[in-house]
Length: 477
Image 1: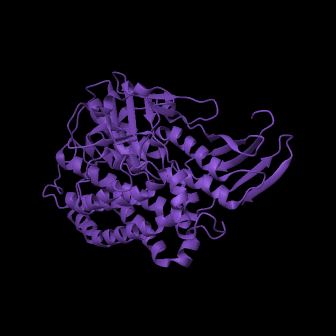
Image 2: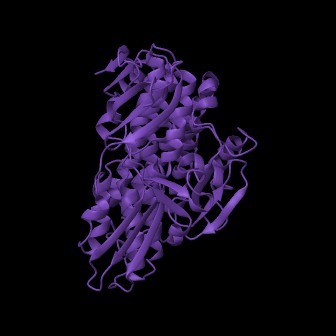
Image 3: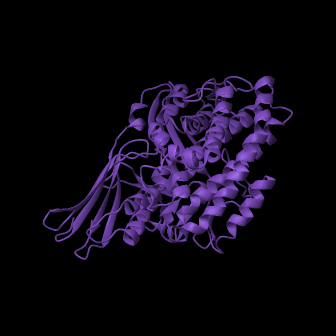
């Protein structure tokens, strides 16, 4: 902290998978001049994998996260496919896609309904005692129930295919371990219309709320950056396979058809002394000018189309929000709902494929390469798993690039933008505090399941004078 300044500390921030805090540095005039989002936890998954047999990696990597284990499972298995040097059976490819789409649906539902709907329903200045899922259930029971049902829909698909909802081990090197049964296929198809109806009415509800949040839209991470995401060969939306595309804030293509396996040539990572979370950047632009965003907002900015009727209609409307790329991170919420719609439509297409019940779902081989990279679109953005093995098939080196790290520079800049706009003087209000938190919620960094369920965030913010005197305090139990 600079001499003669004050510091506001939000510690802890528990709405990610781990521990973090936010510090806001004020100048002598009581204005925010610097802000930092600190991740204070070190887990070390890259090191603890060393020495393990490569075929254990997908199941082990699924343990990284209890919210999006399927994404790590898929990216890891794709890296292992490269180590085996095999092409997995077509049905296994489709089943992996179904698995991933189900996870995106349930994860997005968790973020939108459990975390963000209280802000959207009650407003940013509402009493913190009411802005939780219980308050939502009391004021709008249908909205709360829809959130539960939509998340249950996605989780049930994961359970039907993978045997359990959390940390399934069904995706394996070379494909998947078991085929889809006719009974499970029919059960999922039966549930699709209800899930589609929920997605459509929630999207209409969300669009009806945005007029109330014009000010937040203008300052919630609303600045020029690059956007990156995986697209199909026709530049359509995908979550499973394709090449990377990068666009700038004007919507112009910066790079396309980038091979994910060559990520080291265009993605750099920097370690800051105040956080254990690495900051990724686009190498050709350098650090920190190479700031880019990933996730729902980025995917809809880089994709030309979704490829399903309802989602394409909504995407066209989404692109009408700005003549350039859609910049405000507030619109991550809107993008999530469009992606949910796409996922449900795409699930129906895949489940009706005539070969989806094929029993040939795994290619078996020994290691035929010493290095493999797997990439996929997780709910929060592009995910990379990079492995190197020895001749015995033991892991010797691992690098993981997680979506939250790729959004780290943007999250820090977003916190600063929101804090500069709303936090000033020597008096704190719940509305100020909530908006600083809410801009982080837009990105939906990996969050603790137990914290999600209640929507509560135990924290303490102190506003200190230049002499260290406590001028004000806001605490939440």
